[in-house]
Length: 284
Length: 167
Image 1 (cartoon, one colour):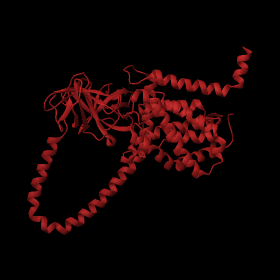
Image 2 (image 1 turned 90 degrees about the vertical axis):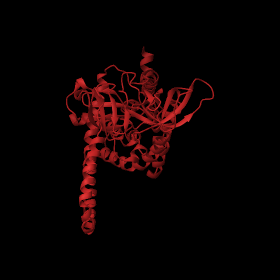
Image 3 (image 1 turned 180 degrees about the horizontal axis):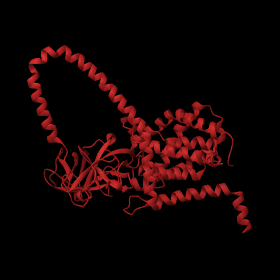
Image 4 (image 1 turned 45 degrees about the vertical axis):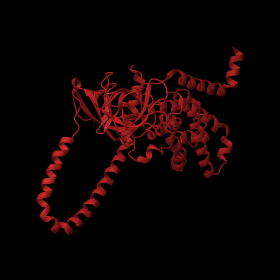
């Protein structure tokens, strides 16, 4: 006993460092992907505190951003004003035609407005945290359980599917991008209705797995969610086929799809929530 | 009384702030590639100048926090940050005597070193499926932002932590 105490006094720092390193390695080997479905209050609390802090820090950034946009807008208006004054006489005969075109533009815009999937309501959210890691693709949004957010809720932007919620706290949620290595989404080729699994690979492209060797698929084909699996509704645009490779052997063909979403520039997104949970339409 | 109790926790607070800021979603395209490792700079500074307040345990907790926030496999950053503080602690005397410009290149090297450890420990699970562009941009961004971050840390250090409080 005394010997142990002497050892501890002598090598306290070294033992402490060794134990911490062992704890980290133990975590690395045993924890695995930490996106399980069980609620973990510590993780949720941490997510909540972080998201609040990030929102707070981002406020001045948003203010500066708005001021910059406002300034640019004023400059643009000034330039346009001068230009319009100079060209007003020339454009006067075209006024009626312009008015007609403007009305047509408004009609087309309203036609193009994104509609939520049947059975779902869309909750608009803001991205407040983004993964800085080279090993994962996930981000934090400013809506959580209080807004009706549930785990596995699909996340979309007007240009297509983004991913799904993997963890939700009171007012924040962690979204797993479909580009993440852990992401698997049942999809089908829109033209030929061939089914496949879209697999993220931590790169800007998606692998289409389990495509039969004789599958009818061409470059440029649109890939949409198949609706199977119970998480994503059918028909959400995932991407377009950009590469095909006929496997020399085996049962499957290799294909690669390019997502329609620019993942590095997502600022707002829609969470698709089951209609029964309906309440507000916009998070905070 | 409360202030004197809180002051030894300042390094831990700055490390947590660094983790939160480096995980921010800033709407600038360059942020997707040139994202500095603020936690590394903060750990590096405190390990050099207040090693008694910044040891393996803080490195472990900071690493787990970064892993959690970024969705990385738990333990990846924890392991690499512990190794980082060990290495910095080992060469602390040499590093403290260095000219600041050389320290910037040391930070560049340390970022590459830490990323190397992270790639190594994740290889069994991920193969080569990393975001290599981000891995390449991070050391450069870390080196470029380091003077500013270190200046802020020096201010915090001189204001509250000039005298050792907890040995």
